[in-house]
Image (cartoon, rainbow, N blue to C red):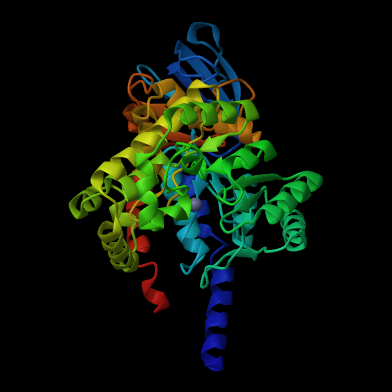
Length: 488
Ligand SMILES: [Zn+2]
């Protein structure tokens, strides 16, 4: 046993010397992309600046230097530097890269850490140039730095802390159990000191623990994000200024006063069948009220509509799942496991009428929050039940349109709003912003499905053509399928 391990270690050390660390990605990045300090000019391009109105600037030249948008102007008035690589933008549309505010990685759990690079490539290939990893691990902090240093060709990373929860979920629980105010305070200070960008809450959080988290985070200068336990309630979360995921605790807050059932189907409430009855007792006026309260509180919302809609609302047939472009990246071992989960869900699900009502009310909440002036952000909550990364971010943009947002508002939720929340110099096409861009064959303001008709993607000033991205995907797909095989 020991001998075998030593041999393995020797082999690993040899590999380190022969092949520079993370050579695969660094190399594909260098050969496929133009280096970070080169100059690139998009010429005759239609720019969608996303600066506050649904408009297109026609026939522009956009110059990118050192990873930043250095210049934008009418093509006939903007000088292109001699050394610039020119990209013909005639008839094309340039918009900001997309942001996924809620994602995880297979490699957070039992999957090998090496898979992380491939996972990030999958996001990038879908036009996602910034992500927020929602249940942090020390590995995320390393990835964040390597991307920031230009060492790893991937979306820019924000890392939430390991989860704070009132209970451990057993194997693979990646977080800290906090059941007293003192434990909560300690966890906040520790995770702040470790360098995480946000404090992430999940479930089973009591009110005293919640209050301690909010107070400690305020003192430490770090923001609190994530789930809202029904013990805390959405009103308290709004008052605390917590950034809310999944519309947690909203459904419980919009029940009629005379509803015979007071619990509902937010978050883990979904798994109690009797809670679905609450959907017969929705008070539409309360939907409007809570939406207005959300906007007044200035709390940003990541509704993750798609994941909840498909998983608990509309469902998906096996055939549909197999047809999805994500399917070839689902590890074989996980296919079996997720199939079992799907079957169990289908068996315990509520009536179709209630599931439809569930989708309708969640959509209505999003529409009303937006109408009241609240800020919506896109999040995929991938990888979950056959839904993977970037593909699902595009589904989420479409889900927002389905909920009643205009294409501009839906794209704003995927670009400008999250950048604003993160304080990131991105999310719009403006001089001085980070060059996170996607070039499209058609106008996404006409139809958000056009946001997938890519000519190429630029991340931090590195330009990747769609053909190069697709080639990278073809290379990584087999690695995903076999990802767990060698472990067993
Ligand atoms: Zn999540």
